[in-house]
Image: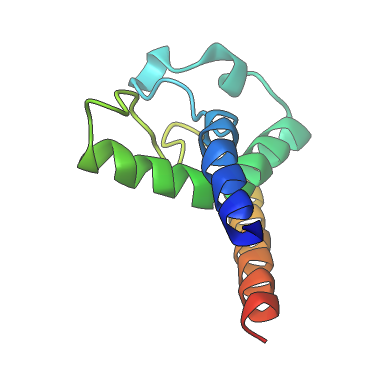
Length: 111
């Protein structure tokens, strides 16, 4: 029963966390204005957040391609129109943190 509750909670939290990982509209110069206005720290933190939420976004991206009727939103894992190196550094750091946490959780569950 405890496993079923965890699974139900995970399935419920997955879309909520993936919704937090919005990459904005990916249409070139008309992309989300909030993402384009930011200093060095803003771009780094945005990349960090997108990196941390990458696993959830990847799952939702796959679900969108499997069942586009149920998941009609377009999910992008990486914001293509972020021209700074700070976004890239933040993204890679966030993705590596997310991967380390996933590996630690899997090890704890299997051991």
